[in-house]
Length: 433
Image 1 (cartoon, rainbow, N blue to C red):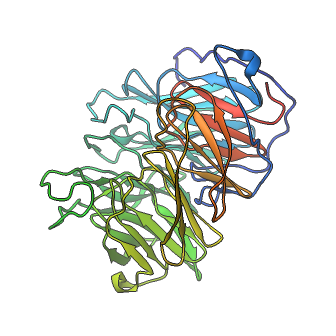
Image 2: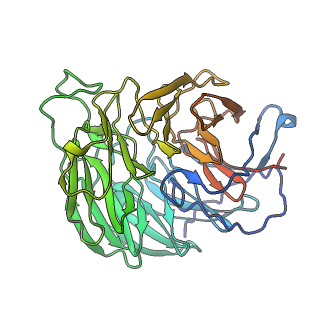
């Protein structure tokens, strides 16, 4: 248990609350698709430091000690988020009481090494994951750590150093009795499966990064362009078979969860990837970063499936960090420069692309969209969460400012939106002030 002082919680409003039935156990939600099965979330909210009379639908706001890019997860009456302290010298999980935002515990590990990172990517950028019994966090070179719901450390797995000039971003995934971890990017990149009860290693697949003969992304024509995958493994179950899908080393690859054996590969991915692959309506969509490729394939393949790509775009005109949503024959996503896009799932055709107007000077969007009903929610650097209509025609429904930069993905659970900014964690609900 951390001896660090507990966070001071600014409780804007405290309303009666019943334990939620709809959990959000990972940063992409219960289905790893960024989609909630609910549809009764607030459309509008405001938080103003300078004029509290403007506040609307803010149930509580819990200040955080340092900036962070990870996203919150929710289980029952608890909210969890990873948090670096002292610029990564301590790496922690914070647990908050869902009803009022009170900190219940903060547990973590100390690290005296020298993990590198980009100035925009604080340590502990990977989001935690839970199955309702344990919370698992990836702390890069400091290890993979599991805690119980009281903050007691259950186990710690050392996967070796994880070194990349831009840091880390891939989050752990729980599948059955396994914790799936992509430990990368960097020279020791590998895909691991750990026993979720003990942290013991079940299997490991080295995934060395390979320099392509030619680049077609934003580093085209350069010999020293950045490489590496920052996305989270996607577990797809289709036609009775499960597979772990991951873009790495210029390919989209699939592995068997039971033993890590390769199932299929698809060529055409560029060597720098920020987004995580998405699955929906029988199709896997993967997108490269920095004006990179777009690949669409079906799961269930064997060997080299490059010739079976459903559509392929070698270089896209927009830079993408946030991961896409697949819904009703369309692909929705936010491009880094502050644009929203809608593509046709069957062909990859761009149906619309519109700039998202921000309330402040920086409309960049680094987090991923989430969806509830026919609404898409996405946060930007000016502290807005924009709500769009998920439809073949572009429509902005609301712009909701809190005035604090966010690189995170909102969590949706039981009518409440949980938003992490560089300064605080918010619980947003109808009736809050």
